[in-house]
Amino acid sequence: MKKDDPFGFDMSVSTAKKKNPRGKRGMSGAFETSQRVCEHEGCKESGQYRAPRSPDHLDEYLWFCKDHVKEFNLKWNFFNGATEEEIDEQIQSDRVGGRPTKPIRKSDEQRAWERLGVDDPHQVLGENATRNPGKSITGSTRKLPPSERRAVEVLEAKDHWTKAEIRKAYKKLIKILHPDLNGGDRSDEERLQEVVWAWDTIKASRSFKE
Image 1 (cartoon, rainbow, N blue to C red):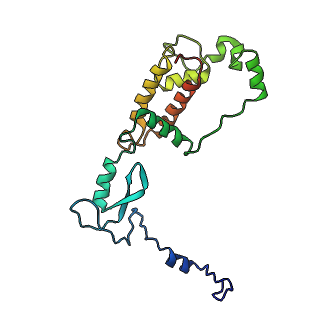
Image 2 (image 1 turned 135 degrees about the vertical axis):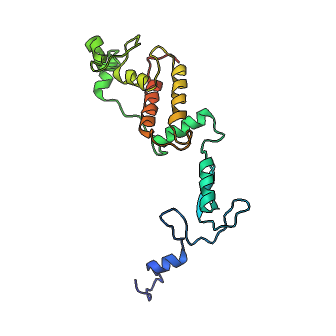
């Protein structure tokens, strides 16, 4: 836009940068133009690496040199001081990107089956409907829908356990698989997602006692 614009606007990129300068960030994550000093006690190196001040203040930063930001990251634990309920709530929120989801509306067919007292249409086929011909289920004591049977297997639980007992198995697996609880190991993230799905399935099921 011309500088003699009657409204006095200047939309040039260079002007925008002058009004809102931003530090140049290198491939390593360092803000190379930062003039800050490392905030680690006794260190006088350049503070080019930022780290969140605390889990409650993720938009506020501490600034460290390369060595001390590594030290900070190794000790960082987002769930430090959180209760099991708060951890579970955060994990559920992360699964949907922090956006609550609405339940899927039931189809006319599903409502019709429910009026007949049938939770799973496959039940009309008898015991063969919930049997997996490709895999022998050991230790099973009762009939369950395929999704719930799979959930029990994923959680390494027993189908006669209560929801409280299965939840303990779920919590045990979460502590092993979640990167914020196992020292940052992200190698089992797919299994973590499967474990969270399995617990959601069991939690919503009416096949298990509370």
